[in-house]
Length: 331
Image (cartoon, rainbow, N blue to C red; front, side):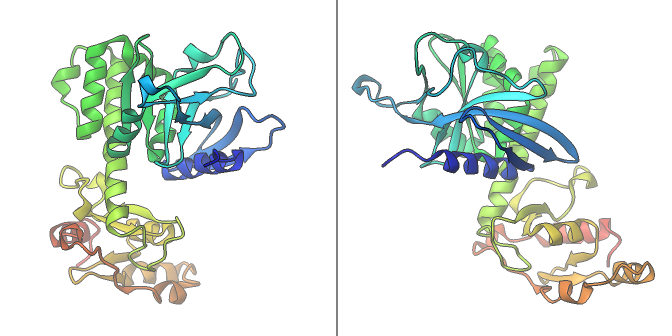
């Protein structure tokens, strides 16, 4: 099978940016590398340069689990982004995951088309855990990256690769991505930047695990409209800011298209214990008073009994529905 085209890799990166909670725009460039992306996420704008090649088998019988990128069409030293982050990736199309390599190790090189390696087990592990760390013989850390964690990796690339400077901290990070939680006692004596990185790793891992579980449970289909179109979010029924009672459990989640997600979070619609999505009449009355109710009838046509996961153990828990409606002041 021929390797994916440049356009396929560019689309995979854009899809990963979207799955990571951002909106990306590939800026035009006359050169194949780096790809230059403008990213908007949570109201913040940033610039990301990406060097990315297809991961292929290394071809050596003695290293049957080794995959590698071949850095073609570039010259040493690699130009870097003066206004943001630059990352070096491999893309494995069968799994739809990335390998991240330490740019500081590979920015300068001798010879033509140098190769960089990663073990296939690292790519398999990141499918389950979101991130996976591999310490190579030269003490370089390669990182397997599931697509929904690409922006987190892009924002913290240098700090993540520097975790390899201390094997104890690296082991803590590995446990963090597997459990999506962190024992504060383990990091008590660490410098504050390392504490922050491990806490953020735990938060992103937990959030991405919740998203994957909810979207898989709902077959990537909006519970209200039943549409897919790769435009579906994982929403908390009881919101995160409700405090300790809100948890990242699939039973506290529901898959919603962005418009219905925002309406749900703002209390325009709500879910009852019969699994019916309803309009909040008080919120509608407020819209009418302010002359902002145009389109409400069309919006409401999709409401009613929601599309539920096939597995009954993944369906919304009435306990969280009751708490959420109480939290939002609904009966």
